[in-house]
Amino acid sequence: MESNKEFPPAIYWKMTPIILHGTVAGMDNRAEVEFERVQEGEDLAQVHGETVKNYAVLDQLVSGAIALLNRVGWPVQGVAADLGSGTGVGACILSKYPAIREIYAIEYSEKHVTHVMPEVFQYFHAMGEKIRRVVGDFNDIQLPDESLDLILEIDSYHHSEDLALSAQEAYRVLKSGGAVIAVDRAWADETPESHLDDLLAKEFPAELKKKYGIQETQSFTRRDFGEHEYKCCFWEQTFQKVGFETFMLIQDHPKNIPGANFILLRLPAFDWSVKLAANLYRRGRKRATVYGWGYQRHVMLFIKPQAIKER
Image 1: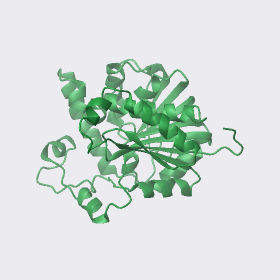
Image 2: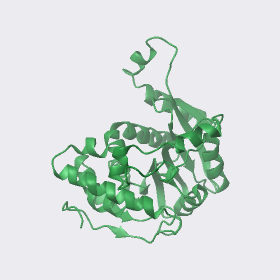
Image 3: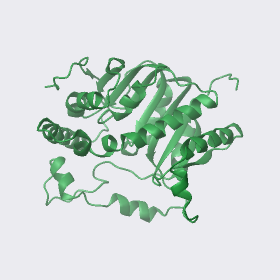
Image 4: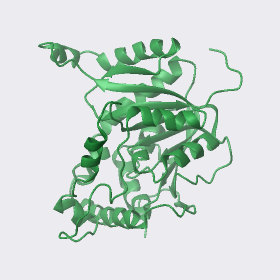
């Protein structure tokens, strides 16, 4: 049963057979647990955590990516999709842009789509009339070829069962000149594989196991949950192979200059660094550093080239 908030009913798409059904069931269980806590009066941002709690940071990152695209001649407008939408925060952010007229919030957890998203849309005052909630799989986007102008994903693609397939599907549905904004985990190229393996072998804490309906005594790791850890170069190579141009914004901040961050936090340092990154993009660079604190989370732009384009 859906939340009683007044939104258009959810749309249901078929899903590819490679999805991890255990993960879907766990996400549904978590949605039910957290939905009940919100109904009992707990604060939504504290209950849902992650994307909801970090809305302001994610909004800044997405806004920076959109500003950069607009600045370098790839205007963001039209029809968008938020892939692996989860709580719907990405769709909320996109709905505030007047140039974006419609958003598909695609999520394979039915309970997140029907229970959680309406609560989040209301909490953040989303332009709900723009948003189409979809129970579906981002490896099988049931829209025609070249029907989307923009794709957003926030911490979703590192759950992809086949990142190359996900990239190919994104390329198919994007129009020429369209782009993917990926706000996701990415590691330096020199990171040892053993370190990434250790991260994926981490056991879920007892509290998360309970939310996902997993027995506390059962061994369950991030790898079991379908997560992956990718280096920057792997992201670039995967999306370049299907035809995308790539540009990566790597978050960093001064560590060895006393007082630097105290000053920069009081200035529009992030906006300035995005403007500098746009200049580097025009000069053919593939990566740029922006002022930020998320060492593991970067903003990656995958742009579908136009056959003939003027800049």
